[in-house]
Image 1 (cartoon, rainbow, N blue to C red):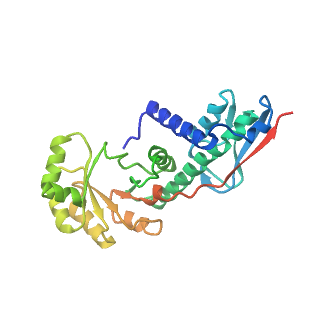
Image 2 (cartoon, rainbow, N blue to C red):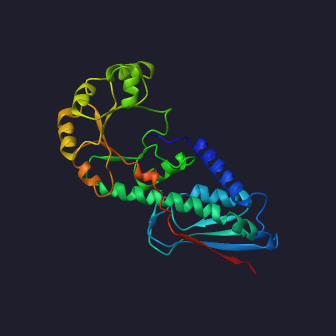
Length: 284
């Protein structure tokens, strides 16, 4: 599923950084004022652990907002996995701007690199199977687009972006509509061109669901044996997504059942930031 177009993406990055800088700097960086306004400096950013680097658009924008004339020279492409103690980039510009933007820039780069690194591990775990690993809507509030961007950078794919671009019918929707069939038929009638997915919790629901106009069926908390049975029963008539009890220890076995998709809330729900550092040297 597509994220957002380039123009929307740029606007999202700019908004994220502007809010982050206001949050951190407020009425002004009191410590940076100790340095002469025209003093220039060069900074080096080092990654202290193995990671997939992600977040360059946010990182760059943090410095550009405070010093539009700064120069950022990257040694590492977005999405590349690096070893510990790799130099990622050098920034040259006004010393005050470099120091004031440092924390905001590193916060974004370390958080999104953490998500991308985890996504990379999950993508690697299903290599050689037909399964695609998807994220979920279990994102940190306010970071939906950024985290889903990081998931794709790490090698996994996005589920729906929000409630507006796809339909996922769950138990409460079925109860509100009166029946599983009514919920699906009404969804398809009102949204003929939108992806429609139905969550099922047992084989009785699966047998009914496979006869309906669906694009995908989510198998919620099915055991490995039940997943294999479901794949055999459906036999390619509709795409199947496994969900529930998915982690790096279980995902390979789930993928080998033959499901098409595996959704993983852990990709975005829990963030472990990558260890980065920045060292600034004042120009003579």
